[in-house]
Image 1 (cartoon, rainbow, N blue to C red):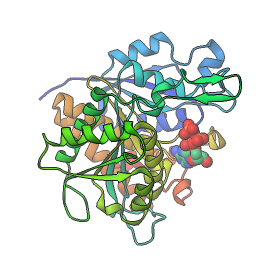
Image 2 (cartoon, rainbow, N blue to C red):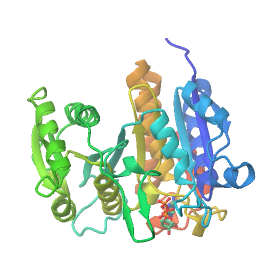
Image 3 (tube, rainbow, N blue to C red):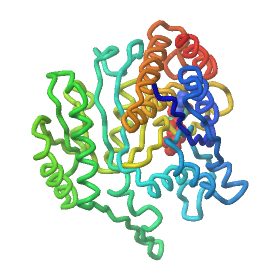
Image 4 (cartoon, rainbow, N blue to C red):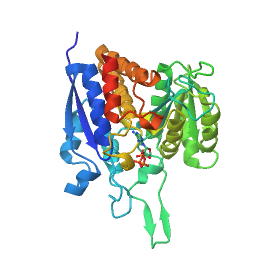
Length: 362
Ligand code: ATP
């Protein structure tokens, strides 16, 4: 049996970041024992205020050398660059580009005990994954847009063959590994675009079609970005895997999160060929920071994704087993009303939810 230990680069960040990150660490330590070593690193908007650096080089190097990266959240109100863009976002954007984390994976899964705003949907009734292209599309030009004479502003949408091929390949492989859509059991990748309007989106779709040729066991489906918002609300059970350009993926994954209980329970993974970063889908939520009021569920479930990704890379069944145990324990804490966080209608504090998950693990 392997005794390998895994190094996790951990950045608490700002706002609720430290609370949710510490909660997730507590759960990971309980479930994984000494299988994981945590390297606590500086970074974020608060660090920028003190030092002028949002992602210190030491932190970047440690993230590059680590087996995986776990992040709380980053961003503080009013901490912005001279062009008005937020400093906090830059932490994971820099990691995203420098470590080439091209697939942003956002599971949309309604867990037992969680109430969906969609009438008629109960735990287990929504289960699909959005794969957002993470390094190009409309956000590729961040920091390089044009503002002319205070009269005209422009940002370019970038779609490359290589960038689209690799994210499409990721989406099809993910569909192959899943059990298909809840409505009909079919393995399906839905391409979300506006191929009817812009050439770059038609190109994105054409390349997804090409990649599909290598995955005949998965069905391909298409949806325009506006139309899919209606379908995600009216028939979410139809979806299995959705692949989308960066900005569309950003927008529809928050909609998906809302249908499954909100930002406080929605995990995310930003995954490349060599590196991966995991964090809750939410931001630093400054309105509730420092009050022990946030839900740690999103970060805990992101940690579950991290363990599964590590297992895919290292083939270490201890990781997969720990992931299953944490997911089951977190699910029990919600479905048996043991400690329901405030954003899901309960009154449990962040630390109490973490404690309850640890007890359920026991
Ligand atoms: P960003 O731009 O970084 O995504 P934001 O301020 O737009 O940040 P969030 O920080 O995600 O968005 O917060 C949006 C709302 O959701 C806030 O009212 C916040 O209190 C709530 N929220 C976010 N995360 C959590 C959480 N983990 N637990 C409880 N409530 C949360």
